Length: 290
Image 1 (spheres, rainbow, N blue to C red):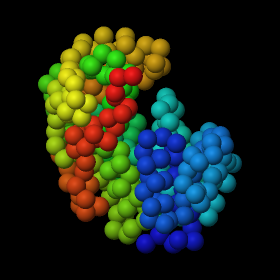
Image 2 (cartoon, helix red, strand yellow):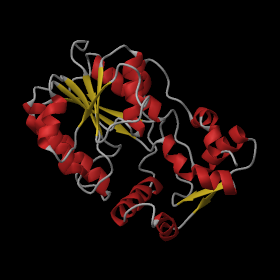
Image 3 (cartoon, rainbow, N blue to C red):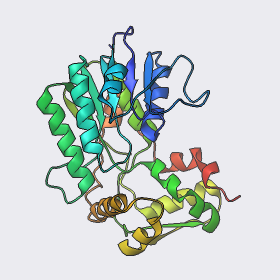
Image 4 (cartoon, one colour):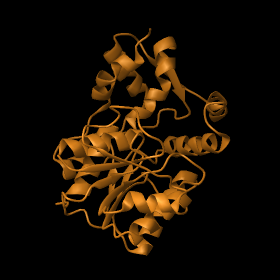
């Protein structure tokens, strides 16, 4: 077990996985230090959470954030420089005496992947192996919470679209990723381990639409879209490099390369992963017409 006198550092603490991990850790009664770039709003984190201001591009602030830390969760904001920033954090963690890094990677990470995000995750994983820090790599599939990006469209037009066709994908709830991450940060037995994290089944976007329909009590439809149309819809929302990478992700999904189902969530936590029906029920208010 983690020495409870040492806080666990959580980066990306205001993001989807980081915030869920903070909750999972505090629910366990573990001391948590969150790394943020600016002072958080009152009540942003559970009572007793320590806050430290730091920036992935500022080595000194990283050193201060890691002082006294033995285990840390690493994720960076979406950026063209994410690999550089994660390598820098890992190097500082090693220098600061961190014993284990739990790192958010991605299903299918490989140095020869045609998907830029999968190549960069593979490079970060290899760098961490090379510097000798103990690690647990989490390779989740597409997040259910990613569908929150379609909330306005689903609420207003009762539909959503993506360039994926009828290909199935074993998407996962962020809350289940957080449960595995918390276990890896607190418990022993996860030394130099890579976990592929998926939901309980591979599902198509038509099946996701059916789950939304049931949860919302009205018909939600899915429409397959050409990559060009999907990319055009993201203009002004995401920078061009991220749009290009997202289209590569969806091409990866469309090829059927993200349909395998893993048992890692239940193996690590003892609890089955949430399915799409539960996600749609739990988040229904976010998708209701106003």
